[in-house]
Amino acid sequence: MSKLNNTEINISKVTDGKRNLRRNHETDNPCLKEYNLSLECLGNNNYIRDACQNYFKNYRICQKFWQNIVADRKVKNIKPYLPPPEDRKNIKNEYLKFNTK
Image (tube, rainbow, N blue to C red; front, side, top):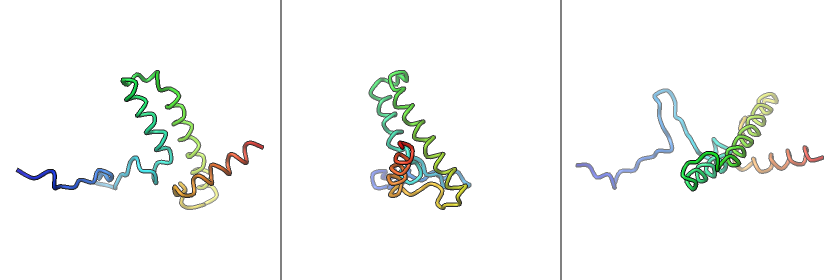
């Protein structure tokens, strides 16, 4: 019998044979907080989706926002296309300043 307690398993990287998939990491998912909040809402409400519609809507808005940022950066050839986590707050603030005038 093997000792599972002494085995470290890194589930942050899943290999599908062709590439490494990293899911649910802040570097790859700028909407990770919204994603986790929606899952928490589902858990707290016995997976009744109607109770969490605001969380889902917020997650979709976040995804659309960052998809637009990535598309804009691609057009302008700004790399990386998805800004690193430390730059995202500034980008959101600039967007809010620009769109509230």
